[in-house]
Image (cartoon, rainbow, N blue to C red; front, side, top):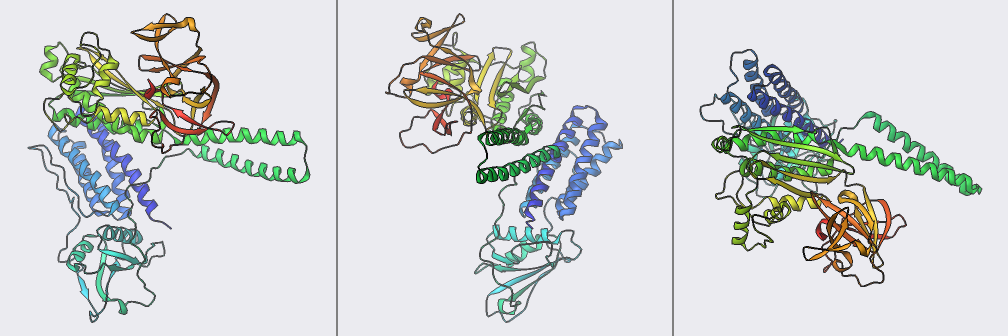
Length: 623
C-alpha cells in the first residue's frame, strides 16, 4: 500500500480548509456576520488540526491549536476583532499553510510571516522540535571498521508509524543524506523499525540533527552494516520525493455508478460481437450492436467529461486574500466581488488560468484603481470596486476582471511604446482597445514609474496573453477613461474534446475550434469591399477585415476560396477566407512538436472522423 496517497488526500483536504479559514478571517475583518465568520474559521482550523494529529504532524497541530485559542477569545468577546488581531491571525494562517506543505513533504523548517507592527503576538511552535534533554540521541555500536547504517525506532504510540517513517526517509533522501532504507516500502505491516543507509562520508552530526527534528522517534543507533540482520540489504535507489500533490477532483457517486454500468454493458456487447462474428450473425444484428455501442460511448464521454468539470469558485476563493494584501501594500481600500462561482470548467484549464487571473487582479489594484485621495478628487467613493465574474457562453466560459478605476491612459501607453520602439498604428485620440492591449502585451512593456512588490517589472500582460492562448482562449480589453477597465478571458470549457469547424484550404484539411467562431458564410465577390486600405467582407452593414488563409498558410494547391469563417475576440471580428466548409466535428486535440520551419499558426493536431490527420488552426494567431 502506497502511503503517499494519504499525503495527497491530506494536502487536498487541507487546501480546502485553508481556503475556508482565509475566507472566514477576511469576513471577520470586513465585519460581515462576525459570529458566522468566527465559527467558520474555528471549524476550518479544528478540522486541519484533527487531520494533522492523525498523520502525526505535531507542528501543524500546535499552530491550529493556538489559532483556535485566539478565535475562541474573539468568539467569547474577550478580544475585539481589531485590524491588528486579524492581521496576526492571517499571518498565522500563512504559517499554517507553510507548515502543512512542509510536514507533508518532509521539509525541516517553517518560516513565519511577520505580523503587522504592534499586533498582538500568538505564541507559535512553527519550527519543528529541536533536540532537547528528552530527545533520543544517536548511540554507536560495533567496531566501526565497516560501512555504517542507522537504525531508527518509531514510538509505539505514534498514530501512524508507517507514515512517520515514510516522511523521515523522504526528507533524508531529498537532502542526499541517505541512499535508501530497509524497508523501502512502508505498508500497514511496518513493525516500527527502519534501517537507513547513509551516503559515503556523511556528516553523522548533521544526520543526527535531521533525525532528531522528526516526531515520534523512540531511539536511534549507528551500527556496522555486518552487525545488522542478514536479511537487511541497501535499497537500490533513494526513495523518490513527490514534488507536488496529485490533483484530486471530487466526483458524485451517482456518476461513478453510471460509468460502471455503461462499462459493464460494453463488456457484454463485446462478448456478443465476438459470438456474432463466429456464428455469422446477420448485418441487421451487427448494426444494432454497433448503434448501441455508439450510444454507450457518447454516454461515457459525457459522464467522464462531467467528472473533469469543477466550479470556478475552487480558484476564485483563493483570490480575495491576494487582492486584500495587494491593496494593503499600496495603501488602497478595495472591495472585491465574486460572481458566477458555480460556473463549471475543466479542472486542467482552471489550474492553468490562476496565474493570468493573479496578474490581472494585481494590475487592477496597482494601475487601475486610484488611491483614496485620487478617487475623492475624481468624485468617486474612497473604496475602489473590483469584480471577478464567470459567464457561460455557448461552448466557452468568459471570465472578466472589472474595476471602477481610471481606465487605461492611452497617451501614456503610446508615449512609452514610442520610447521602446513598439509599433503604434494610431495616436491617443483614435487608438482602439484592441491596439492598446497589443501594446500592453509587448514583452517587457510597463508604464510603472517604479518597481513595487505588486508590479512594475515588465512581466505580466505578455505572460497572460501567452498562457491564455496556450489554453485555446483569447484575451480582450475594454477601457473607459475615468470609469474603469474590463479584461475578458474567453476559454473553452474543456481541453479533452472540442467542437471544431472542418475546413479545406488548397486541398489540405484544417480544424478551427468553435470557441472563437460565431458563424460562416458563402464568400460572394459582391460582398468584398475595401476596409482601411485592406480587403473587407460586408456582413449585415458591417465591413469585417478579410484574412485569406491561402496567403497566410502559403498554400499553392488547386482550389478557390468560396467561404468565410467569422471569428470574434472581444469586440473585434474578422473573416477567414477558406476554400470549403466541410462540416462541424468533435475533435480530440493532441499537442505536437512542430518541425523546424512550421508556420506558427497551429495549436495541435487531431484525427478527423474519417481517420485522416488535420492540423488545428489557432484563429487568434492568424488574425
